[in-house]
Amino acid sequence: QVQLVESGGGLVQAGGSLRLSCAASGRTVSMYRMGWFRQAPGKEREFVASIPWSGSNRYYADAVKGRFTISKDNAKTTVYLQMNSLKPEDTALYYCAAGSIFKSTWDYWGQGTQVTVSS
Image 1 (tube, rainbow, N blue to C red):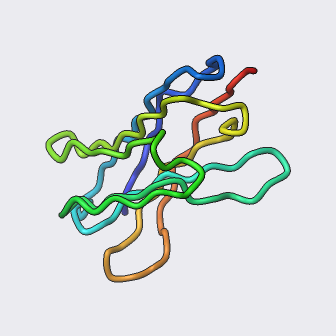
Image 2: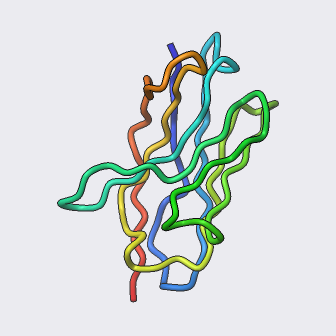
């Protein structure tokens, strides 16, 4: 079992920045890759970024490349999403997720944190 708790969402003006945090806990957390997803009202949940606990390969959705950065603190088992140059279309509920490195699915999800970008 892996438990995920997100924080850091809020209201920001277009062009501003926010940093989301995801604290992970569980016996085998190092065996997972971590990801951020988002879901806007009326839309399906979409992938934003991912990073493995072991290693440094980062992957980003095209919509956020160059603006968002995913990072991790292994000692704190916390993953971050630094979001810069925010746009109104970034408004969504942002979820942290964990997926086994041996599978392609995402197995554990946090409760989500709301990000609202005003124009």
